[in-house]
Amino acid sequence: MTVQERIAAAPSLATIPDDKDMLRAAVELTRDLAEARPEIYWPDMLVSAGIGYAAMAGAILLPGWQAWVCAAVAVVFLYRALLFIHELTHIHRDALPGFRFVWNVLVGIPILTPSLMYEGVHTLHHARTRYGTQEDPEYLPLALMKPWSLPLFILVAALLPAALLVRYAVLGPLGVVIPPLRRLVWARASSLSINPDFRRRPPEGAFARMVVAQEVGAALWGWFLIYTAWAYDWRPLAIGMSVISAVAVFNQIRTLVAHLWENDGAAMTVTGQYLDSVNVPPPALLSPLWAPVGLRYHALHHLLPSMPYHALGECHRRLTAHLGAGSTYDGANYPGLLPLLARLARSTMLPR
Image (tube, rainbow, N blue to C red; front, side, top):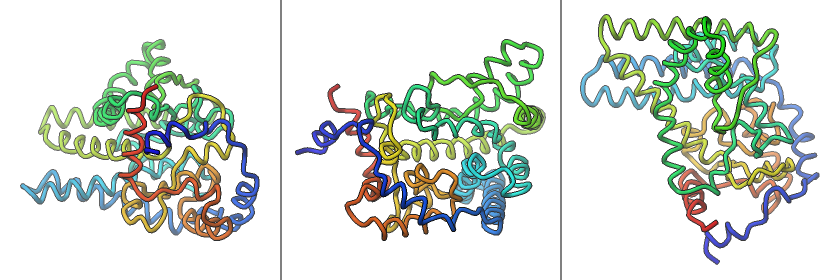
């Protein structure tokens, strides 16, 4: 049987019952690892951001190949720093005092991706009755779509920095005086979602106040970028946006292999959600580079959403040792990025 035939003959993930032994083991074997450790979070985020910005400065100031090397380093480290936005959506609000504020000041607002873009949205992706359905903001059945959908998916990411600059520097301020525009921008352009049918509900309470502060900060930063490019030199802004565009593309490629994207919209069990998600554990050597901050264990993350990123490796080792090869848990482990991309591309080519 060919790979295409195996994919076509695979049972629907929506019909897979829960593996209660796996779910029980995931909880019971990892309880002692659930505390977010500030001595890991803070240096990791600060060093990643520091190296990323220093390298971006080199990309702007240095000539020739040196600039290209600096740009590549900036992409890798700013990508890692940016992906702490994923941790912010899951850690308890009191776990790391000041971390959310400092991350937004150093990373979220300068990259025009404040945490409001993900908080209150990503948790919907983990909701038991929403995952993989039309109400999931972070799911599209990409494996069931046409081949051209994959390059289009990546192209959209490449345009994201320019879109974010317009959103925060132009549309956000205009929305203050044009309420219908404000509501439209919030519903359609204020979340890191991939489902075009997703509409975001208005923010409430303390979160709404946080949104205002982040929007003001992002608008002021956007104005500063536009003014300095117009009044002095457009080149730093162009290089900086190119670096962030590469970060967005890098992240979009990772997104392509975070799941199998094979669900057709039906509600799924937790085990079905797990098997539609992807781990790329050791001995894969490059996965910490393209799936940093614990995202190489994305399927495991769907079993343990609140587990801090630094504990996922140990969680994986314990569950692998306990459940063994050939178990349901083993079914979400894959060898690397390229085989997953190839699987997804082949799936889009199957007749429907």
